[in-house]
Image (cartoon, rainbow, N blue to C red; front, side, top):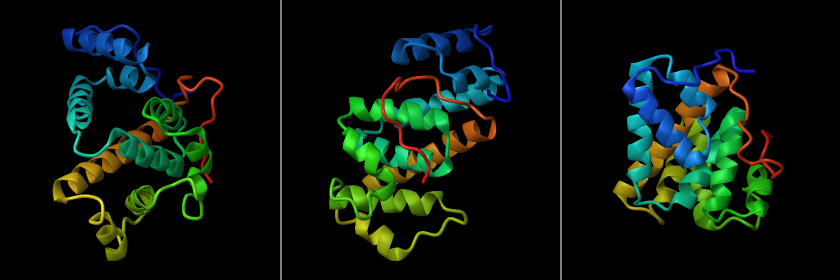
Length: 185
């Protein structure tokens, strides 16, 4: 159970609008949104970042969500493993890839591009963060500077979300009901 309950109905206009669009997009008000609604400035900043992360489309959504599921798995955040797995499926990530994400280095189901991105996600999520030049340079085989900025932002954003929710013990909201979700190795 989450350490902070959050609220179910917004008092401010911004909170009510956020709840409306969250529910419209994913079918319910996600627990992290309900928790952030207890602090209006944090909710606004979070909402703005979510909007602009979604509007960034120079890198495929499937590649970004694959890297984000990897981050959530490394951090061990049940909420983002759950919702990330559900979004992954909608963007064409196969069950086989989700099942093998913890073994991506030796797996044959991932392309060389996906492996380069997953290695980058691993390096960005490790503590301390150290990105070896060979991992970073490999990205240039697939992406230009602008795309690498977008990919880096998506991975860093998932680190924020997963660490925030993990610290507050936010559990799964059931987005992947009955479907496979990768667990930390």
